[in-house]
Image (cartoon, rainbow, N blue to C red; front, side, top):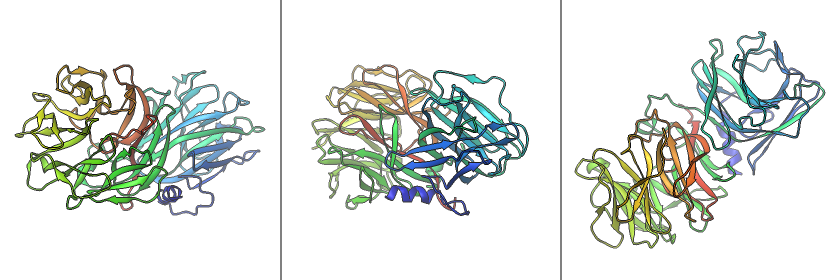
Amino acid sequence: MRIIALLVLFAAGATYAQENPVGIFQDHKDIGKPKLSGDASFDAAAQFYNLKGGGYNIWFERDEFHYTYRKIKGDFILTGDFEFVGAGKDPHRKIGWMVRESLDENASHVSAVVHGDGLTLLQWRRLKGAFMRDPQDEIFTPKHHYRTMQLERQGKKIIMRGAHPGEPMQELGSIALEDMPDEVFIGLFIGSHNPDVVEEARVWNVRIDQPVPDDYNAYRQGFILGSRLEIMNVFEGKRKIIYEEPERFEAPNWTRDGKSLIINKGGSLYKLPVEGGTLEQISTGDIKRNNNDHVLSFDGKWLAISSHRDGLPGGGSTVYIVPATGGTPRLLTEKTPSYLHGWSPDGKEVVYTAQRDGKNYDIYKMPVNGGAEVKLTNSNGTLADGPEISPDGKFIYYNNNVSGSMQLWRMKRDGSSPEQLTFDENNNWFPHISPDGKWIAYISFPSTIPVNDHPAYKRVTLRLMPVNGGAPKVIAYLYGGQGTINVPSWSPDSKSIAFVSYGPKKEGN
């Protein structure tokens, strides 16, 4: 399968032999010669890692456990969902992420650990052969351990985060390890805390991301990270990578027949089967600077697209329509910049965000078959973006920072009765309504990101909430942002969404 080949390609940065590759990891082995051998395997179809391991413990001055690992240089973010299999024998059996200086049994390391009894904390060995340490203020949740675990390296600092299902990530601890080398082993581990027992666990949604510096505007300064096209059942939270490559692509649309996804890459549009496979270019004639604003009509016959024209205000982003199978685009918006985001269910109107006369970005609509654009919002110094018309045609959902932070709103089709839907500290963008009209999926940026910006290559979350408002829940933690979920990307059965995450470094960067 192409996905397996590409996963191995991204893992090929290390220069040592790959004897037993497992998914995106280069090898796996027992550390410290435990009495009973462990094992690891990867279910490529479900994208689960199945772990088995024994060992007396990961503690004192030496360790025994099973390790599934790869080598990496520089900063990274490791994220995954962890679950023990079976009742277990010892309450201190352990699973989690581990960053290790070497494969020696007494190597220095730091680990994000979940115990069998729910004890969840950061543990470390500063120097080779030293005794293990953990914080005095241990986090103890005996019945509900953190399912999602994350380790991030920022220079010499290692940060541990955790999350219960549906909740935001919380920082659980950090440690600076000055003697940890730049190139380290990273991976998944399991230990039974009993030399006569082999324990089992499984791990899913496993992602290894290599971030850029926070002050580096990577999206504008060059494509340096690889891209993954993912699909996820929003109610189960299980993600699956169906396509990836070391170049940048963006913004999947799910076709109305449920069989394909449409993305943009390098100014062109491409179609890909939902099972993965080979990209098929969609012709847009002489329009070759397509951006990540492309939307299918509700009947699936037409694509509205945004593409840039040189020498015009705001980079010249212009809205066109073209047959979904490809063809010659027809211009809709003479004025620029105009960034498309939605169709009306009857196919007669498109909605977009636009800046006119160098002033505010507001929401506009325009008839597809000719007519003047209509301004629907009056931002007065704020920013309105991401308009999408609900499947019943009654509302336009969008994001606006009129309240001080970027939040989700909706209004009637004529622009009247604006209503705020989210009220939190995050900056929330791009509401996408499920085809059954029940749910909103959207992307949340942390409050540290400027309120009017949605940059690429940031730690973000995807969230789900009822369409009429209500408590949102986190459905995915990822490294993404601009290009992740700019356009409608629900499956026709309203069970899944498609999105793009970033992380693997492009070779040479």
